Image (cartoon, rainbow, N blue to C red; front, side):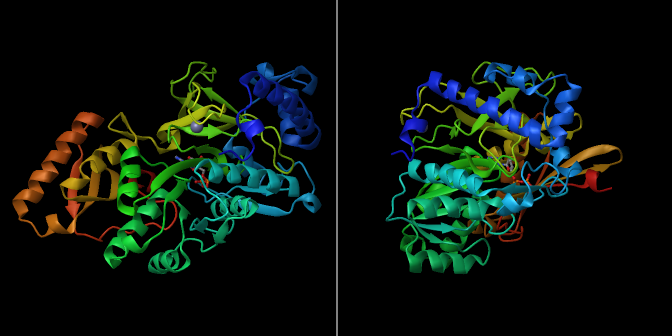
Length: 435
Ligand code: ADP
Ligand code: ZN
């Protein structure tokens, strides 16, 4: 099922043509209305007329998260506040928060994007969606809400938090779709298990995003909640949730290419990566936005694009995220380590007595980096003898060494001793950055 079949299944040549037409207009609009881009283009000797289609996109200067901070709060808006009907801000995972604004048309386009992702997982008017993403300045809650509302789904705008109440609400109101961060979905699953009510849930699907998560994590959530778990990708700077979404085939997230152009670049050389299946940094250009348009935004997120046709019939290219954002990468004793690599190893061992609740602590002692991983035991292992706990610890250390190429200390801790997250999980504490 599609929401906008004409766009979602458009022949590739037509998508490129549409993107080109929109890009030409958007670049002129941005040049005329946003000082930062005008200056930067002038400095680079580029005039809007030089952009004749997507083949010229690479000529435009990049934009960065620091621009949003430098022009805080409204300096990058292309419209006066009188045209802006809503403000959102990023959750501030990596530093000072950044602010974006939407016109009425922007909100409508955003709702279309999130409606598409709900339709693509089979949602209909009969579905009841519990939106447990945070409402407020964070884009998650409202983004999902607007799409669900547009489709005529029944929305439970509960926001995040109050976990037992969430479960009661899901049961009492008959929620069939859950929308929240994957870490919160796991916490909800764990709570439902503890309350002994998993079989009272009517959930059939979940749309989870806003933070990196692994296939192992997907498996866990699907098994625990008896649902299909779909990945969605978005970021405040571009629109919020709705930039890319999985279809029922769960094989990468279709990018809403009629609204956003994705380039993949090598973050070192800044050259475009043309080949499919090669990891690079995601760079987005919006081609329909009025309030907060953005050109060649370097997301710092790493991803891979798949261009072969999807079984669902959509022609939009698909994004798969191998590792998370380059900002997440830890350099430990000179070795690059992504938290997702650690998560993969831990979750592969989940049935062996540990849970998916973990925390990574990096520190520096005597000029040497240390990597400590705390993982919660499942209650049955906790009740077991010390020898089996030590054996599992050792197994995990060996496995991590072979995957990461460096040694880590693993400590299995008591059940429920690691703080749960209701929004984006804070898995890594890098004490080196704190001093
Ligand atoms: P913040 O940068 O403060 O976290 P946002 O709420 O806008 O602000 O988060 C956007 C970021 O969240 C993306 O740039 C990306 O790093 C991450 N993200 C969003 N969706 C996903 C997803 N499905 N998988 C991995 N990371 C994601
Ligand atoms: Zn598909």
